[in-house]
Length: 441
Image 1 (cartoon, rainbow, N blue to C red):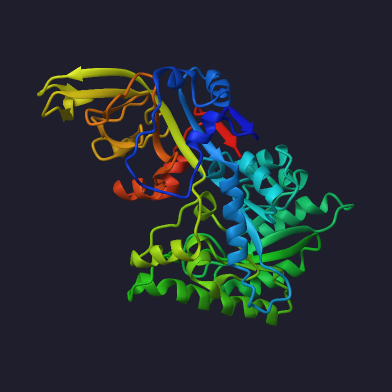
Image 2: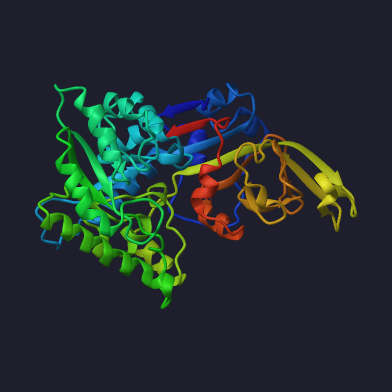
């Protein structure tokens, strides 16, 4: 079970950890022992006390709402002549990229998100039970037997195989008092993962005509390489996918099928491919404050300038032990780190069982007292060691930021991810259920 707490008033301690416009820097945060042991606010102490370990993830509600509004404005430019604004479907699958799916959905529904995207009926049910009323799209469809839950919780399934139409229609037909069940069709435009092929459009239309209890509410596809802009097969893939999708879409219309809401754009396409915006966009990682990696890298820098975002989550822990070791002493499993000088090693109360990626061992850094301190040795399940020899004044109880904001400083999650050869969402989704989430204005 994930423990959560929502805080609507910023305390003195919370202010010290709140996101600010500046990033980088090596200044000292100035935590003293009394302050550090008292916590970064009674709010954090309350929720952390339930699990008995000083590890928590702070989620900025204002950053989430800022990012949503920034995306909405970006895909609805003032100079565009469009009858209706483009909708925004907020992706909250994977427990909201580690931020807490139901909680994030509640925050973003209040902020005006039009739709929500989950990966399964089970995720959709959790979002519904949190009180969310807006439409929820089940992106990877349903498994036979889940149809009744789609109907019970008013979830909109994605159909990616033609035979799913009959399954849905049978379930929907059992309740002759309800309106036809709305679904979205996924077209495989070249990713070769999920979706019906372009040459199946005629068969789809013929089968849909037989399903009186169903209604096509939208048509979608998904891009495999929308962040790639090189002159290469990968760089050309998105353009080819666009062409295949729109050909299939026109065939549907020619057969007399209204496609409903047309949506293609994921995070990278939202930021850099306006021709893909359609009627609705589906922000994922950018909703949580980070642009994906681009090829070439300059495209990411351009995206960050054009669509500035605010990081929403900071993963924090505390120093639970300090040890001074001589040169030549090993640290942790297998002596993967051997001190080359007399060193001070701090032990953190978080490991890969909490979401500290194991690949960060001997490669990553954390923020302590406003300075970067290297992770040394192998990251364990429950603890991580850092070298604080060059950080003055570190004491047991000090707050350590594994990634995210620390006052005016930022250890960007996407930069941490690039440093170990993975993607931002991998790090964020890795924050486990035993880590309490604290939601702050």
